[in-house]
Image (cartoon, rainbow, N blue to C red; front, side, top):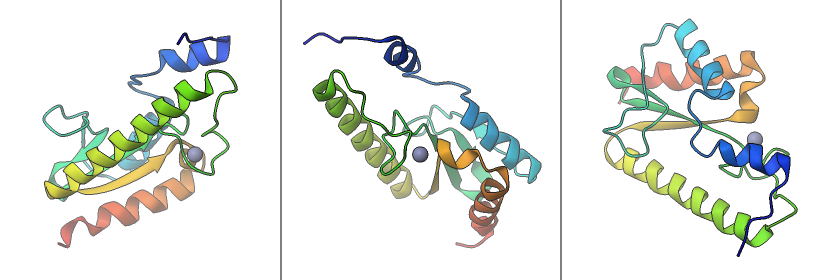
Length: 139
Ligand SMILES: [Zn+2]
């Protein structure tokens, strides 16, 4: 099968391995403002998690709504062309996310997923991150 691309899908496809995406930067900024220390993309952990808080044994994964196929989200859309290919690709991404999540949990990490669409509201993002990260000192 051959991919039929439009400017939009081409733009999206270029971002297969997003590094320093806007949502991720927003999350880093808020976590930093809250005073938490973290490391980025630790290669020794499954899935090279976006933000790692070693002392808190906590991890924050920032998921783009399109690539990670956010359910019931307007950004988690199905492109109109190459539907079968996209379906396969999204299914693979969602499965990989689940595997990474389980591996991290099994290794004793607490994991929070922040969706791209949740980063638009900084206030809400702040509340969510603070509530997750401040649980760190409890088992
Ligand atoms: Zn979303």
